[in-house]
Length: 143
Image (cartoon, rainbow, N blue to C red; front, side):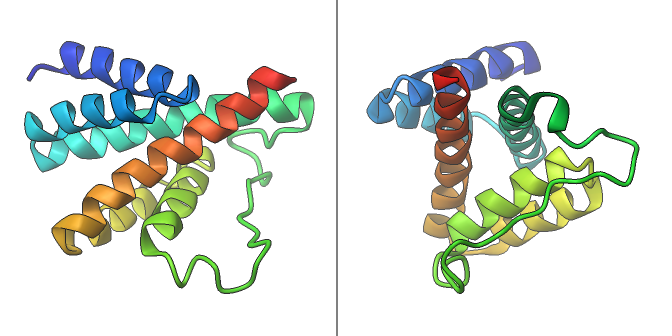
């Protein structure tokens, strides 16, 4: 699958997820996963997280952290230990935060860890990232 088609499918998956159509979002994400190698899937994660970063900037407006400064997004657990108990959700939150902060090294390390996990956890991590971004987009659209 070429990058242009992959980009179209990523946007389609995000749109389905934002619309609350989990079945279509999952089908589209599965299509991407079945036709992508590990490098392309890393790009897919980055694209999804970049969409999440855009949604965060819509939510926070002029209070959003400014790239290239000491400002940054910080991950705060509302329920202590919740991310420890759910590695896919932890991946999603940490990957999005790292991407929003422009921390490519952390993004690559997190993706590498997800990739080396068992197959189900890897798939759940990709789905959790998409679901996380869709939730943020829905919040942004409500504003």
